[in-house]
Length: 518
Image (cartoon, rainbow, N blue to C red; front, side, top):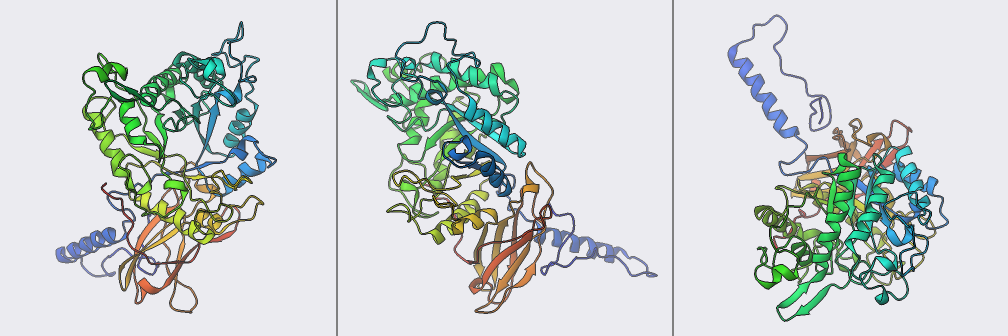
């Protein structure tokens, strides 16, 4: 929070005090106090329901050395962008050297991280590089696993096998991962996108004479408990930082999450035969979740921050109240603790090119900024996220990078480093939201002063305010100027570690961003 009061133009606002040689009266002291209170109210940078401490999260498989890109150089670049925390998937079948084994090898101890069947080298490199660059780690421990970890290995054909993973086998792998990386991980999460069948967890739905059962929800509950127990036993300091879900926005995440919490479509405890079919008989234990991890892409990873959906079961970015209603209902029924929040752990906008669909490069820059502003207004949201530093050559995969596959920076690259969103309040008043993501702000570093600039018509930019950011580099101010809502705006700041000046994209005032109630 700023310690020095600022005027609307950024100059120091002196503390009201009597002139030298004059007597301070009671009325003058009251007027001085009133002025201080008024100034404090005007200069308060956060709204009452905002989340000033959101983490900036990043994920890119290049950090694992999955491509020819140099992981060390890539990690240093991610750090320079001002990232707080790096997410990585630790996938059983990629760590296990011969994942098509249909029988568990004799003598193989899955819970032993030093087993010769494991190759941790890519994860070791990522963990070491992340920590060396002063960033935190979110580790998603996940399947699919080797074929023998399935309840029916014969169903496993070619490629990864997601069919009915055995919780006991996953528990052993999770134990190995946690033992190896304990003390080095800030957050864990359990299983990636369990609501996406075939790729990550199958089967999804099963018809019975008692109704359709969301089998994935029942399986995921057991997998989460298995993974959580491994963290609680072998990295107990992080037992309250195990995230639940990691769900994709499509694939009906809300019904799956409810089923995993032993709740029906109305958010009430299962009754009758469905209680048994869902594995919810007897006393249902409360899960100690650290929050719910989500990937709130719009369908296809394009659209905009205010895109609507006709489905009630999906969870794109503008529909977060759906998740909070689910969490609050689960807390009322004792399934989880009260007041749990959400973490956006994977997110972005696909671009055209390279994809045959998606948003333009310029629109991507604007939309990643607007998404951050939308999420900033949500106190229950603990992190924002950017998936991919650079696109991949395969057009059938998500291409949400800040660079293209040849390494050329898109407009989103600079927009990520210096977000800006301008919201119209009236013809002569706007809100300016932005962030400086410098390396020195990592891990809650010092505040920074930024320069907010405005240009009318075709004129040049001129400074109108120099607010201080909070410790995450975020600021939000209201500016009153003639023609503010039709002007052009930008933010400039200097990284005092490197001496470099960084400039945001040029923004114009838009409508207030908001969640939909349903």
